Image 1: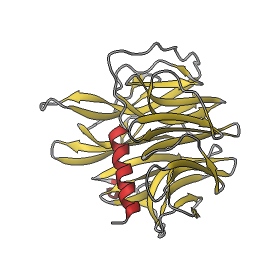
Image 2: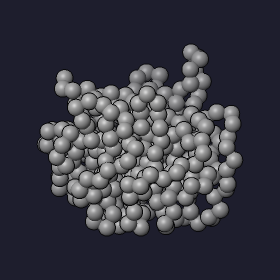
Image 3: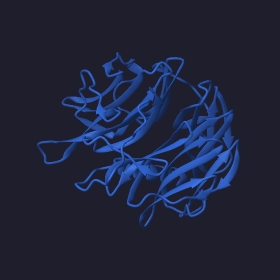
Length: 337
């Protein structure tokens, strides 16, 4: 096994271990979200004690703090935080998850909480990582057994020179679907409107964003040995992120009003949390213990993570109310009601 592949496997393990945001008994003081015209959708899950004394994780999502009831939900233990959520232009929420049931492993797919018939190609042992909806077609990426795959309405898409998919994103105007991944040569790759472009070097692309035709990627620049550093690329041009040294990292980005916002969890001898705007490091709210996702809506920046071990989200740096029953969170979507 190559050294790069070993590093990528270790990075995947780190993501799995740190992907759930658990809560404790000391919630922080929050301010309510006072905009009655904005809906905030957060996917994640809740813990359920089992007979072995452990907590099983049940995947679900919340809309404006209210848990969505998923019809015929069978999953009683989520696998590796495997779920993906997206919302269509028509306002329909698509949610897919996989996990264990009493007699094996199952994948389930819902639209607005109603279970849908899942194509056979999407069934079974799949770790779903990201999704979007374009023209009412459901795009999702994930790892099936040991192979990374990309499906549109259940039909696997073929890109011969791409061996891994890490993120999928819809442009702000809804006209372009972008995918980040890794080529067979080990370099980062983006796929936009079916066209593949590589960023040369030993790079692991983490997240992708498309804004006004520009393609933005954040990822790890690998060196011969750790520590490594995070970088971001705009139309293939590399930009540095100061104080991003790490052994492994998990990051996310969004572009708003022409500025690139990036958050990251950096893993090494300790875990640190960072936030940059156009490559300039920003202050984070006190007590941050996790950074999972970032999005923008009407000029405001929404960051999802955890504070003092409890799931939390911030709007322009101000903490807001969080669903009390949620035990971990991984994705935030903001839309106009």
